[in-house]
Length: 236
Image (cartoon, rainbow, N blue to C red; front, side, top):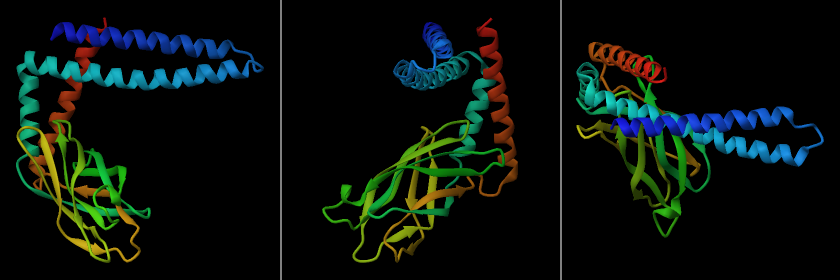
């Protein structure tokens, strides 16, 4: 596990070094070296995305390492996960979008500082992906969650409608002990335009139990602080 951590860290340092080199090259390029600057900018954009990904991998490796080696850290993680698979809860649509012939494919989101879960549609699918006719809507989603309150869910089932589609107003949601997260459409309303889809949603995983909400938020701060302190010491 420690070797994996060092490997991830070395990859991070190497990419950040390359990122810095390209930025320096761009500063030195003259205005008339237009094509060369475009190529460097494209390369920099690719490196920037790689840096983001490798940083995520490094932090993920740190969390795994701490979970295995720090009892206090692992207790915080376990407690937060338990709080999130404790109950079924409702998720409500609060903003819709409109694109003809498409339905929700993937949601992502997180529990924010106010202790509520906000989910956003990050990908759409053509209705015809689910049916020979354009008369189907996503109805069941499955994904995952973690101890920090990060959620994702992808459409795995759709239902057929005859004439007028019905867009979800609420979902029944549940987290499970293995980190799986599911959402199934509950209440629906008629979409007379035939173009609407769910864009943003909000839910309360704690079902108005503020005691649980406050414990989760406090634990999350302690988890983040633990990881930050470990990274700072690791990089010395």
